[in-house]
Length: 175
Image (tube, rainbow, N blue to C red; front, side, top):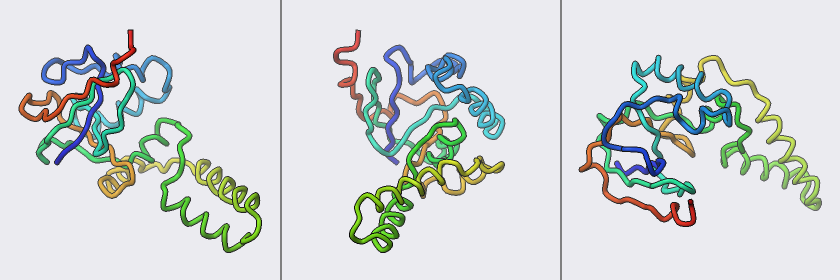
């Protein structure tokens, strides 16, 4: 399976011990990050994992690695929507939901673009207010690979022969 991971320029993909407290997300920009990662560590029995996705999705200031990953190296696949909700992030709902709401709005308000837009905005805000389920981990795993934005947790370190491409284009202009 081909996956992408984006890591800081000083990160060694092939060796070392990961410490989630050193993550840029642990510095306070995502207050729930460390407690959420600890939940995952307990479920997986390890904190030696990195995040990856199917999409290239360049990340400014980071190096991208295209990996060829065997299923045995995938510790879990999580639904990105539930993961971001666990982090307390306000994210957009899945495209299937917004598409359905837009269709409903078109049926309800065929001649009024403002009312259609307001309808979809209201549905989005309602969706964002739904509390995170207590069993978020199990649901995130159950949806996993079927998610619009699956997040892959890969066993760390990554063997050198698994790296098929390195993208440094996002380092340009970074001092």
